[in-house]
Length: 488
Image (tube, rainbow, N blue to C red; front, side, top):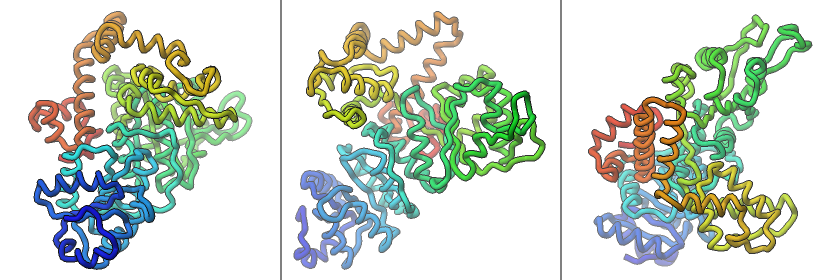
């Protein structure tokens, strides 16, 4: 079968197209060739096109069962082709591919009705499994309008970040409560803002409050407002964050630190949609979407009596885990380039460039402060590095020392495990072995499912487990709600 087709050749290939189950649309010959080879091996009929225009011409004569298309191509884009497919043949699943793995592409793809989003480079067996699922399920996603410009800092090709992008896209027509977990500096507020911008409440306000940064005796008034005379100094009625966020989104950062008495009040709002201002007697109705975030293990805090289990269940409708930067070393280079250009714009100077050796060193740095720390490092480089090309010697001392320390002794994760165990024993934590075992297994399961696109049978095979074992451990570890959207 020919690899490409011109408009003139389409008429001559009608018979082939009629039999084609899968259409491949990509201006990159190598991608078409690879996909053709695997589809031929699997005896799946297929047709290839080098542009969206050629595919649309063929679509006037016949149609595929599954269409897989690149996003960025000369002429009409893959997203334009996707829109045309949704209008003309909404029952045909469309898989979009791109080498530009950012939130904008993922959200635009899902809002345009894509069946799935496949970042390049991809595992060919994973792509084949995706094509088979698309052919079997033939699902569609409703159109969405008015996509906003995303935060460019949310970049990433790491599988865990792609899962976050997919989730934002899938949630774009929902106002469901979301719980975002992840270490400090992983970008939880950026994701919360993206969820708001790509939601039905995008025209409403986005209001953020860090519950750990406000004294507990003031937090109630901050959240719910107060009536005049409610306490000494309350000379006027004050609108709280719930009222300020009316019709929009309220982002509760560091929810794990919320005092117990306020947890009860928040639970009431989530359950009944009503609350009272401090000193007030008239109930206030709340039309607010809640997005909460924490760097803490809320299940562990529930076990210690520090967080209400019923509140956790109310918040944990959809859970998004943001991976630490050390789990996505391949994203460090594009993030560093972005932050260097951002700092240069802010300071009105030429952006500096990192040598391959400097990038390699950054990729091996553990980044305890995650993406926020990388941004600070890039700002330091913009101000302090002497030349335009930044080498290893020009990096901040803590990066050079920290990388050397991490490289010494045990291998990375064993060294980190040893440090964590030592710290736990030093503070007298009982049952630390069970906690670490649980966290270790949770990491294994999340990573394996991210690698397989959420397919449990494949994930179990990678882990060397049976599928029933994986399912049982997901239930026992309390991951069922978090991983509920994964396919079997």
